[in-house]
Length: 154
Image (cartoon, rainbow, N blue to C red; front, side, top):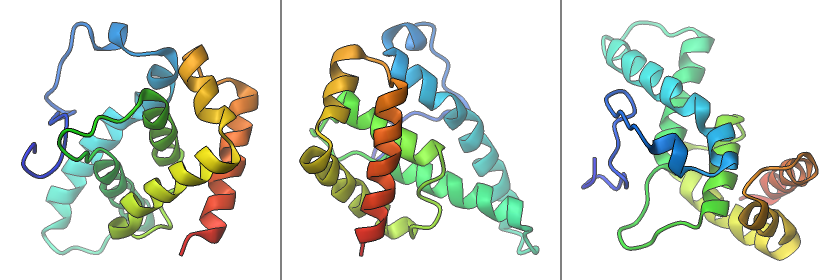
C-alpha cells in the first residue's frame, strides 16, 4: 500500500489502534467515522464484482465511493497534509460529493478545491485549525465552497 501511494499505509479492515481516537481532533473523529466501514464494504464488493456479475445501483455506488476514498487517502511522500485540509477532503468524500467526479480526476479536484477555499473562503481552514471542530456555520460555508468549486471544475 505504501508503494502504491497510500500514506499512511493503513488497511482499515485490519488496523487496530488503541490511541488513534485520542490523537485525533474532534473534527476528524466526527467526519471520518464512516471511512472504515465504507472501505471494508468496498474491498468485499470489489472482490465479489471480479466475477463479472451484473451490479445493482447501490453496489455500484459503494464501489465508486470506495474508489474515491482510496484516492483521497493517497499522499505523496514527504508531503504531509495539514489537518484542516484533511478535514475538508475527508468531509467531501464521506458526504459523497466526489461520486460524480471520475476517479482519475479526484486528486486534481482536491487540489483545485483547496486553492478555491484558500482564495475565496480562507476562514474555513482557519476555523478548523484554531477550533479543531467543524462548526455548523463553517460547515455551511464548506458545502457552499464545494458546490461552487464543482460548478467551475473542468
